[in-house]
Length: 209
Image (cartoon, rainbow, N blue to C red):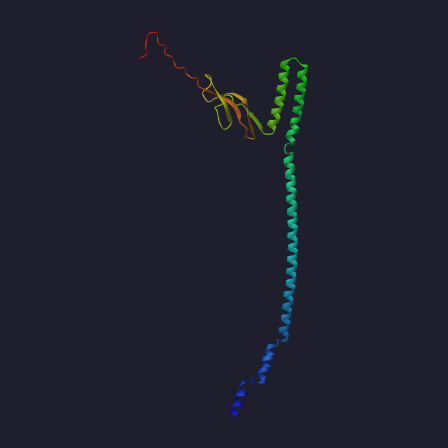
């Protein structure tokens, strides 16, 4: 019986130890105030970061909208540029058309072919001047060595005046735009005259050895 009482007394926690444990578990007023201040600081920081996140998201949405509007504006300007890119050239060519119309009227009233030719040549010169203003150059190929990069041969003709492979005629000239080939010249090139082989005439009554 005494042994049981001793065992029971051994496992019981003294009252003083329990009170000390409770005191240790309960924060002091200074510690509580510090924790409360820290919680308040973290809450304010979270609210600030949340506000900044919302502002950045709104900025992102505005940037996306601005980018979309910019793309639409660029596409519109690009379409207008393509549609009216030749406007200046056309304006320059209209007076040339006027001169051609006047030349046609002049042909009907004029029997002097020389004057007609001179008038047409003036119109042609004005047309070439307009083309040159826009970087278009016309080049004659006659007399040049045949170059497949800028000449298109349609036939060959025998010539004793030119070396073989030389352009001796052209059906239309070569055109360049700012140094880039627009259209090759259509040409005729020379070749060596064919040497006719002599025909041996065998006299009557003789046989060829």
